Image (tube, rainbow, N blue to C red):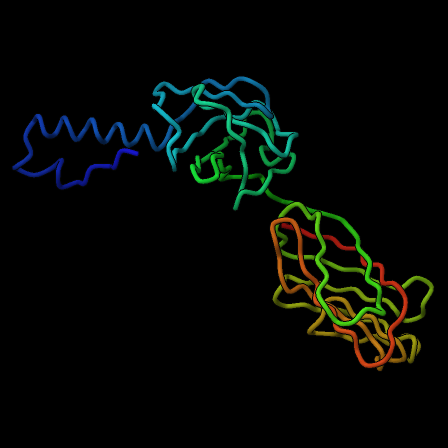
Length: 250
Protein backbone atom coordinates (compact mmCIF):
# COMPACT_ATOMS: atom_id res chain seq x y z
CA UNK A 1 0.00 0.00 0.00
CA UNK A 2 1.31 3.44 -0.91
CA UNK A 3 2.27 5.45 2.17
CA UNK A 4 0.64 8.83 2.75
CA UNK A 5 3.38 11.46 2.22
CA UNK A 6 4.57 13.37 5.26
CA UNK A 7 3.42 16.99 5.49
CA UNK A 8 7.05 18.12 5.45
CA UNK A 9 7.63 16.91 1.87
CA UNK A 10 4.63 18.84 0.54
CA UNK A 11 5.05 22.18 2.28
CA UNK A 12 7.81 24.69 2.93
CA UNK A 13 10.15 26.87 0.82
CA UNK A 14 12.29 23.95 -0.33
CA UNK A 15 9.44 22.12 -2.07
CA UNK A 16 9.60 22.42 -5.85
CA UNK A 17 6.62 22.40 -8.17
CA UNK A 18 7.68 19.05 -9.60
CA UNK A 19 8.27 17.60 -6.15
CA UNK A 20 4.89 18.82 -4.97
CA UNK A 21 3.14 17.24 -7.97
CA UNK A 22 4.93 13.94 -7.34
CA UNK A 23 3.90 13.88 -3.68
CA UNK A 24 0.35 14.92 -4.57
CA UNK A 25 0.18 11.93 -6.92
CA UNK A 26 1.47 9.74 -4.09
CA UNK A 27 -1.14 11.17 -1.74
CA UNK A 28 -3.98 10.52 -4.17
CA UNK A 29 -2.70 6.99 -4.83
CA UNK A 30 -2.56 6.32 -1.08
CA UNK A 31 -6.07 7.64 -0.51
CA UNK A 32 -7.52 5.63 -3.38
CA UNK A 33 -5.75 2.51 -2.16
CA UNK A 34 -7.06 2.96 1.37
CA UNK A 35 -10.67 4.00 0.88
CA UNK A 36 -13.19 3.71 -1.94
CA UNK A 37 -16.78 4.84 -2.19
CA UNK A 38 -18.75 2.52 -4.46
CA UNK A 39 -21.54 4.35 -6.24
CA UNK A 40 -22.60 1.29 -8.22
CA UNK A 41 -23.78 -1.78 -6.32
CA UNK A 42 -25.17 -4.89 -8.02
CA UNK A 43 -25.40 -8.61 -7.55
CA UNK A 44 -27.56 -9.76 -4.65
CA UNK A 45 -27.74 -9.05 -0.92
CA UNK A 46 -25.54 -12.11 -0.28
CA UNK A 47 -23.29 -11.84 -3.35
CA UNK A 48 -22.52 -8.14 -3.53
CA UNK A 49 -20.79 -6.55 -6.52
CA UNK A 50 -19.52 -3.03 -5.86
CA UNK A 51 -17.79 -0.74 -8.34
CA UNK A 52 -15.78 2.43 -7.76
CA UNK A 53 -14.43 5.10 -10.10
CA UNK A 54 -10.82 4.37 -9.11
CA UNK A 55 -10.11 0.66 -9.34
CA UNK A 56 -7.00 -0.32 -7.35
CA UNK A 57 -4.53 -2.78 -8.82
CA UNK A 58 -5.22 -5.33 -6.09
CA UNK A 59 -6.95 -5.88 -2.77
CA UNK A 60 -4.44 -4.49 -0.27
CA UNK A 61 -4.47 -4.82 3.48
CA UNK A 62 -6.58 -2.14 5.15
CA UNK A 63 -8.48 -1.12 2.01
CA UNK A 64 -11.83 0.42 2.97
CA UNK A 65 -14.91 -0.06 0.83
CA UNK A 66 -18.14 1.81 1.53
CA UNK A 67 -21.48 1.43 -0.22
CA UNK A 68 -25.23 1.44 0.22
CA UNK A 69 -26.59 -2.10 0.51
CA UNK A 70 -29.24 -3.43 -1.85
CA UNK A 71 -30.82 -5.57 0.89
CA UNK A 72 -30.31 -7.44 4.15
CA UNK A 73 -27.96 -10.41 4.22
CA UNK A 74 -29.63 -13.77 4.79
CA UNK A 75 -26.44 -15.82 4.54
CA UNK A 76 -23.81 -16.17 7.27
CA UNK A 77 -21.14 -16.00 4.55
CA UNK A 78 -22.07 -13.23 2.11
CA UNK A 79 -19.42 -12.14 -0.37
CA UNK A 80 -18.19 -8.83 -1.72
CA UNK A 81 -16.71 -8.55 -5.20
CA UNK A 82 -15.03 -5.15 -5.25
CA UNK A 83 -14.22 -3.80 -8.70
CA UNK A 84 -14.09 -7.36 -10.10
CA UNK A 85 -11.00 -8.14 -7.99
CA UNK A 86 -12.45 -11.54 -6.91
CA UNK A 87 -15.34 -12.12 -4.54
CA UNK A 88 -14.27 -12.50 -0.91
CA UNK A 89 -16.29 -13.57 2.13
CA UNK A 90 -17.49 -10.88 4.53
CA UNK A 91 -16.91 -11.58 8.23
CA UNK A 92 -17.09 -9.50 11.37
CA UNK A 93 -14.89 -9.08 14.42
CA UNK A 94 -12.17 -11.71 14.81
CA UNK A 95 -13.10 -13.74 11.71
CA UNK A 96 -16.62 -14.52 12.93
CA UNK A 97 -19.43 -15.39 10.55
CA UNK A 98 -22.18 -12.85 10.10
CA UNK A 99 -25.71 -13.49 11.25
CA UNK A 100 -28.76 -12.67 9.16
CA UNK A 101 -29.40 -8.95 9.25
CA UNK A 102 -25.88 -7.82 10.15
CA UNK A 103 -26.28 -5.87 6.91
CA UNK A 104 -29.72 -4.62 7.91
CA UNK A 105 -31.40 -3.83 4.59
CA UNK A 106 -31.67 -1.74 1.45
CA UNK A 107 -29.92 1.65 1.58
CA UNK A 108 -28.03 0.78 4.77
CA UNK A 109 -24.55 2.29 4.74
CA UNK A 110 -21.99 -0.53 4.81
CA UNK A 111 -18.30 -0.15 5.67
CA UNK A 112 -15.90 -3.04 5.03
CA UNK A 113 -12.13 -3.30 5.51
CA UNK A 114 -10.01 -5.85 3.69
CA UNK A 115 -7.76 -8.11 5.78
CA UNK A 116 -5.06 -9.87 3.77
CA UNK A 117 -4.27 -12.30 6.60
CA UNK A 118 -7.86 -13.54 6.60
CA UNK A 119 -8.24 -12.93 2.86
CA UNK A 120 -11.67 -11.59 3.70
CA UNK A 121 -13.62 -8.37 4.08
CA UNK A 122 -14.36 -7.42 7.70
CA UNK A 123 -17.68 -5.66 8.25
CA UNK A 124 -16.94 -2.71 10.55
CA UNK A 125 -20.52 -1.71 11.32
CA UNK A 126 -22.69 -4.81 11.84
CA UNK A 127 -26.22 -4.03 12.94
CA UNK A 128 -25.66 -5.89 16.23
CA UNK A 129 -28.33 -6.66 18.79
CA UNK A 130 -27.60 -10.39 18.75
CA UNK A 131 -29.81 -12.62 20.87
CA UNK A 132 -29.71 -16.40 21.29
CA UNK A 133 -32.19 -18.56 23.19
CA UNK A 134 -30.87 -22.02 23.97
CA UNK A 135 -30.64 -24.79 26.52
CA UNK A 136 -28.27 -27.42 27.88
CA UNK A 137 -28.26 -30.04 30.62
CA UNK A 138 -25.93 -31.05 33.43
CA UNK A 139 -25.75 -34.40 35.20
CA UNK A 140 -25.47 -33.29 38.84
CA UNK A 141 -23.78 -36.52 39.87
CA UNK A 142 -20.68 -35.45 37.91
CA UNK A 143 -17.64 -34.15 39.75
CA UNK A 144 -16.72 -30.48 39.72
CA UNK A 145 -15.47 -29.36 36.31
CA UNK A 146 -15.97 -27.22 33.23
CA UNK A 147 -18.78 -27.55 30.70
CA UNK A 148 -18.52 -25.87 27.30
CA UNK A 149 -21.83 -24.72 25.79
CA UNK A 150 -21.48 -24.19 22.03
CA UNK A 151 -23.72 -22.97 19.23
CA UNK A 152 -24.26 -19.43 20.52
CA UNK A 153 -23.16 -17.87 17.23
CA UNK A 154 -21.37 -14.85 18.69
CA UNK A 155 -19.27 -13.80 21.70
CA UNK A 156 -21.83 -13.11 24.39
CA UNK A 157 -21.78 -9.97 26.49
CA UNK A 158 -24.23 -11.34 29.01
CA UNK A 159 -26.45 -14.35 29.68
CA UNK A 160 -29.52 -15.08 31.80
CA UNK A 161 -30.10 -18.57 33.18
CA UNK A 162 -33.24 -20.36 34.39
CA UNK A 163 -32.26 -23.73 35.89
CA UNK A 164 -34.21 -26.56 37.48
CA UNK A 165 -34.41 -30.29 38.06
CA UNK A 166 -37.79 -31.57 36.91
CA UNK A 167 -40.22 -32.66 39.61
CA UNK A 168 -37.78 -31.89 42.43
CA UNK A 169 -38.74 -29.49 45.23
CA UNK A 170 -36.35 -26.61 45.69
CA UNK A 171 -34.10 -27.32 42.73
CA UNK A 172 -34.64 -24.05 40.90
CA UNK A 173 -32.67 -20.83 40.29
CA UNK A 174 -32.60 -17.71 38.16
CA UNK A 175 -29.29 -15.99 37.46
CA UNK A 176 -27.35 -13.52 35.36
CA UNK A 177 -23.73 -13.56 34.23
CA UNK A 178 -21.35 -11.47 32.14
CA UNK A 179 -18.27 -13.58 32.80
CA UNK A 180 -17.19 -11.31 35.64
CA UNK A 181 -20.06 -10.67 38.05
CA UNK A 182 -22.40 -13.68 38.41
CA UNK A 183 -25.53 -13.47 40.56
CA UNK A 184 -28.42 -15.85 41.25
CA UNK A 185 -31.55 -16.26 43.30
CA UNK A 186 -32.06 -19.88 44.41
CA UNK A 187 -35.04 -21.74 45.85
CA UNK A 188 -34.48 -23.30 49.31
CA UNK A 189 -37.92 -24.88 49.57
CA UNK A 190 -36.36 -28.30 50.02
CA UNK A 191 -35.58 -27.17 53.59
CA UNK A 192 -37.64 -24.05 54.34
CA UNK A 193 -40.96 -23.48 52.61
CA UNK A 194 -40.98 -20.39 50.42
CA UNK A 195 -37.38 -19.53 51.30
CA UNK A 196 -34.94 -18.07 48.80
CA UNK A 197 -31.20 -17.45 48.82
CA UNK A 198 -29.25 -14.71 47.02
CA UNK A 199 -25.93 -16.00 45.65
CA UNK A 200 -23.49 -13.28 44.68
CA UNK A 201 -20.78 -15.58 43.31
CA UNK A 202 -22.69 -18.00 41.04
CA UNK A 203 -25.26 -17.61 38.27
CA UNK A 204 -26.63 -21.16 38.53
CA UNK A 205 -27.40 -22.46 42.04
CA UNK A 206 -29.29 -25.69 42.70
CA UNK A 207 -29.66 -26.69 46.36
CA UNK A 208 -30.84 -29.81 48.11
CA UNK A 209 -31.50 -30.16 51.83
CA UNK A 210 -31.42 -26.45 52.53
CA UNK A 211 -28.06 -25.91 50.95
CA UNK A 212 -25.96 -28.68 52.49
CA UNK A 213 -25.97 -30.52 49.15
CA UNK A 214 -25.71 -28.45 46.02
CA UNK A 215 -24.32 -27.87 42.54
CA UNK A 216 -23.48 -24.34 41.44
CA UNK A 217 -21.95 -22.83 38.31
CA UNK A 218 -20.80 -19.62 36.69
CA UNK A 219 -19.41 -18.46 33.32
CA UNK A 220 -15.61 -18.38 33.31
CA UNK A 221 -14.78 -18.03 29.60
CA UNK A 222 -16.41 -16.70 26.43
CA UNK A 223 -15.49 -17.78 22.88
CA UNK A 224 -16.63 -16.75 19.42
CA UNK A 225 -19.41 -19.37 19.47
CA UNK A 226 -19.48 -20.70 23.03
CA UNK A 227 -19.15 -20.09 26.73
CA UNK A 228 -17.76 -22.18 29.58
CA UNK A 229 -19.59 -22.91 32.82
CA UNK A 230 -17.41 -23.91 35.79
CA UNK A 231 -19.39 -26.25 38.04
CA UNK A 232 -18.75 -26.96 41.71
CA UNK A 233 -20.24 -30.07 43.27
CA UNK A 234 -20.43 -29.77 47.05
CA UNK A 235 -19.81 -32.45 49.61
CA UNK A 236 -22.75 -34.81 49.52
CA UNK A 237 -24.49 -36.38 46.58
CA UNK A 238 -26.46 -34.00 44.39
CA UNK A 239 -28.65 -35.99 42.04
CA UNK A 240 -30.76 -35.58 38.95
CA UNK A 241 -30.27 -33.79 35.66
CA UNK A 242 -30.34 -30.02 35.64
CA UNK A 243 -32.09 -28.39 32.70
CA UNK A 244 -30.73 -24.93 32.01
CA UNK A 245 -32.50 -22.53 29.68
CA UNK A 246 -30.51 -19.46 28.69
CA UNK A 247 -30.89 -16.13 26.92
CA UNK A 248 -27.56 -14.78 25.62
CA UNK A 249 -26.95 -11.39 24.08
CA UNK A 250 -24.01 -9.86 22.30
